[in-house]
Length: 170
Image (cartoon, rainbow, N blue to C red):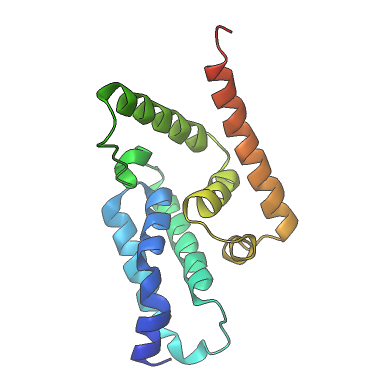
């Protein structure tokens, strides 16, 4: 791999890698460090990587592994509300509507944060980042059935909690 191939194949994924690392680590500086380390590892190993077909998925797997290593070394995990991480703004809505949306997003973020680790990873990759099932299989090193079952269970758990809250008093 030469510099041009690196710039065309690997660098375009930097924002996705950053968001993925940030979701794991909950710290912007740590996420930036992880992405930088991913790029260093890819560049240093560029001569042996001719057989890699999906560079983005391969980089996501490295990001996942480095993020997990950082979490283990920090022995604590901090998270930020989803609206801060993804800068969700609703300027055209009334204050009441935007407050309701913000509260709903906070609830969904808490529900997702309460899921088991594998479910959190799969729902983030599929519903936030928009990866295909095959890419998720490659990133998380799971088979297709595991990814589908895990995503189904994660969505179901979040849906049930939202339904329970919204149906209260009916």
